[in-house]
Length: 125
Image (tube, rainbow, N blue to C red; front, side, top):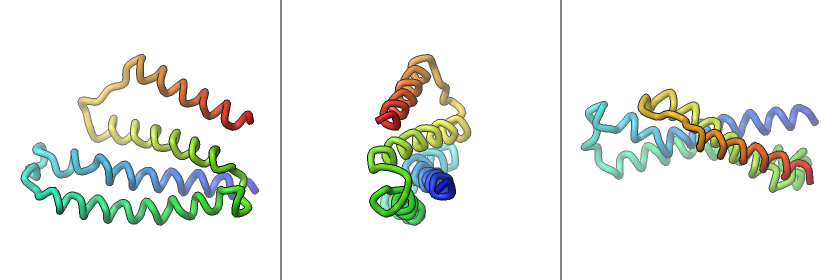
């Protein structure tokens, strides 16, 4: 059962890495800083869709392996809250790494702590 926990979380991390790049990577890699600000929007959308394909290749198996509906260790609500927290962590790492003007302040940290509280209460049920 422990393998299903770890495999589910690992796949969710991979899926969120792809999705974060699909959603926000174009701002960095197709931005004015890189001389690509004139790239047509349809091209950026196609590139993002291509990345999102790989997100689904990890997300769907993560949910199937992790869901109690298919023999996994997590309820549907638990899967969702795990995914949201992983999304937040991946986004913070991505934004701090690739967008040098990004910083965290106390309001961000308080919001993150509240999300950790949500995880606690959802898993306590």
